[in-house]
Image (tube, rainbow, N blue to C red; front, side, top):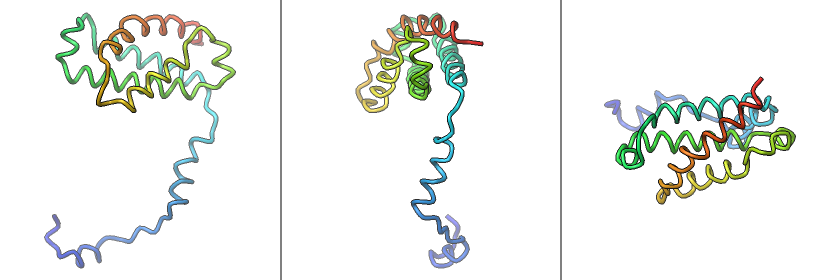
Length: 142
């Protein structure tokens, strides 16, 4: 609260005159630039390492009880899926053993079904599939 009346407050704030189309153009500037897929691969690898650090030697029951770790792991899996979705088709074909579409699919499930997250599936992903993914990504690193 500023302590001012709404009309006084409005007088002190500069009017923002940015159209929706201008905002869209600003947001799309970075999207149109093609990035080196290695940037995304490195980001996936680093994020997978973060998940490993978060869960350490934790067991499933401990994982279920630790809300902060659960949320951080889910968030990092979303980040991995988002980065995987940015990998171009040429790179996906080159590293065809990586299950790119499944990684993106998991991200989509986590984002769109956040009220009903299957933590057993999350646990399976981080304990089984994440180590496999890291092994596959090691082949791509320069």
